[in-house]
Length: 117
Image (tube, rainbow, N blue to C red; front, top):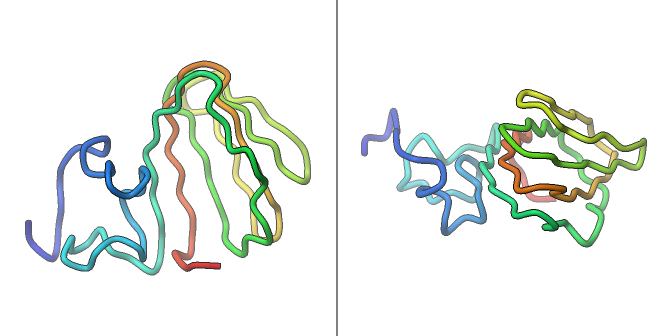
C-alpha cells in the first residue's frame, strides 16, 4: 500500500469498519482511504435487516445507491423503495433517515463531508 493510491475488495477491506471504506474514521495508515472530505460505505444487508432508530440532526449530504436487491429508505420528507440496480436516494443536511432491506441487498453509501456529528 502506498499513501497516494489504494486497491482491494470493498467487502474484505471494510470488515472492521462496519462497511465504511473511506472516511475520517479510517486509520491514516490506510493512506488515501482516510479522508475528512467524504465517506464511502459498501454494505450487504440480509433481507429484514434494518436500522431500528432514525438518525438525529445529521448535517451532511448523503447518497444511497442500490447495487442489487430491494431496499427502502425512509426520510423525514418521505419514503422511496429502490428496486433496480442504479436506483438511488439523495438528501441534504437536516433530513433524518432510517432504512430496511426488503430482500438481500447491496448498497453503496456516500456522505460528505466526513465528520462526526
